[in-house]
Length: 367
Ligand SMILES: *[C@@H]1O[C@H](CO)[C@@H](O)[C@H](O)[C@H]1NC(C)=O
Ligand SMILES: *[C@@H]1O[C@H](CO)[C@@H](O)[C@H](O)[C@H]1NC(C)=O
Ligand SMILES: *[C@@H]1O[C@H](CO)[C@@H](O)[C@H](O)[C@H]1NC(C)=O
Ligand SMILES: *[C@@H]1O[C@H](CO)[C@@H](O)[C@H](O)[C@H]1NC(C)=O
Ligand SMILES: *[C@@H]1O[C@H](CO)[C@@H](O)[C@H](O)[C@H]1NC(C)=O
Image (cartoon, rainbow, N blue to C red; front, side, top):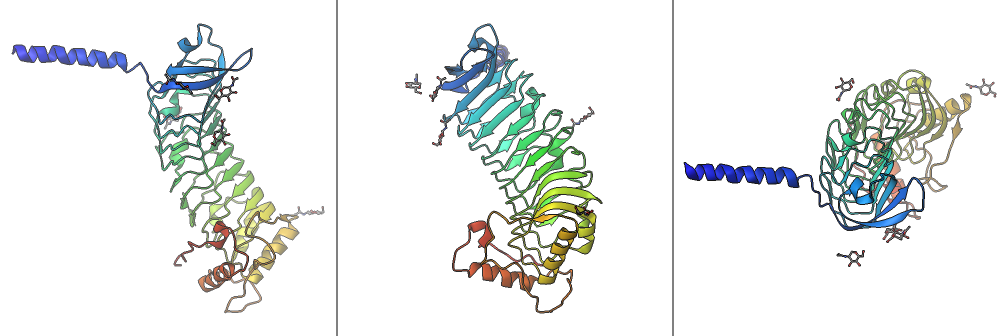
């Protein structure tokens, strides 16, 4: 009995101790933080423990904090807390692998948060709850392959997210529940394979959507439903074999549409009638020649401009190819033989193409 009592007392002490120490953070050890204040020159401060009000005297006037090029593998609980005037917080090149949930606490005016050029693997569910006024989030150039559901939800001011150069294989609309102010969505250079149904339905303020340089082979029905005007829709350097018109709402206006370097043989007439485009890039696709002509005609008659792509373009790259089943009109069917032939001709060019254009990893999708 008495040993049980002793054990309970011991447990109690352990628990109390734990409660107290959990609010002491040890994330920063001899880390130099560049600070900007409301007035006065920026200055460097060496931080041990947390970035918090008491570190920076009574007057809480720090508005920007930058931590660059320092080793900082984990942002533990309450790494940055009670910084009520802080607007900008930047971690740049800090080999951060892990941002624990609760890493940030009470950052009521934070607008810009950047955790980039690190080794971040996962965005957990409640990391950003402490910063409800966030407007700009940069988490690009990491190794993120998991973003928890709702991780970017309930951020009503969030306008821009830059999440390119990560390892994401899928994109999920549940990430953004209630974050309806989003205007720029950038997920370039990931490994995303599909865009789901009604992906952007609740994000009607979107103006720029970047999914270039992914592995998208499938865009589900109504993916772009809810959108009326886009400044930019980037789908270049993906694996699209065809684009079904039912992914778009009727009369969608797109200022810049980038489709270069996919595996497209044609765009359907229905698609061309459904959307209008001011600027288009389409180089490096195995277009059937009559289908390419039809796109040119469509663009011309709607006063659109054809732009040259950044890469996968040039006099040596064929614009289109002739099907075995020769036709003077555009047959709206996928022709995988044509695509194979086209890719082979790209690989055979004497002047080597960049790795994205050459598609050395090309696997023909069965259709
Ligand atoms: C803190 O870092 C500086 C250089 O950034 C180094 O010169 C110094 O020795 C470090 N101090 C401790 C206690 O590690
Ligand atoms: C802060 O420290 C960084 C790197 O240690 C240095 O490059 C920079 O000039 C410093 N800035 C100020 C305002 O002292
Ligand atoms: C951080 O390091 C990279 C590469 O070592 C360098 O290019 C960059 O200028 C550095 N940034 C800062 C803010 O020191
Ligand atoms: C979205 O907002 C509504 C209304 O404020 C709320 O009821 C709902 O729980 C929120 N959704 C999530 C996933 O937090
Ligand atoms: C294209 O431009 C011409 C001349 O500016 C104009 O008359 C015509 O209505 C325009 N067509 C479309 C589809 O915008």
